[in-house]
Length: 135
Image (cartoon, rainbow, N blue to C red):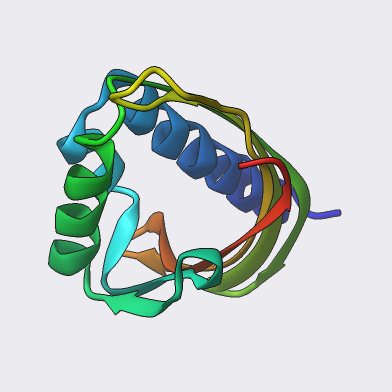
């Protein structure tokens, strides 16, 4: 495997880590920086076929985060396939969230991602989430 391919895979792992850090720090700037301008975020389990554009995605995320005084998200990539300036990644999430009424949620999920390299930096261009267990 080429060194360049390994560098890209490492950068995509870092993208996923930055995404989780943004969630855990409740930092919209960090979290929002992981998305391409024209990205799509799909959450079919919530009836959302696709939120389009980084601005709309970040706005929806802020609204969702307001519902949970505590959220912790961990994620691990399962597979990363790089093809030039595009990549696909499958990752698995382990989350804990406490709602305003004190209900504890512990979903386990899977993201199927498409990533693009923008000005030398990897970004999510599409993230599709599905719940594997819990909620």
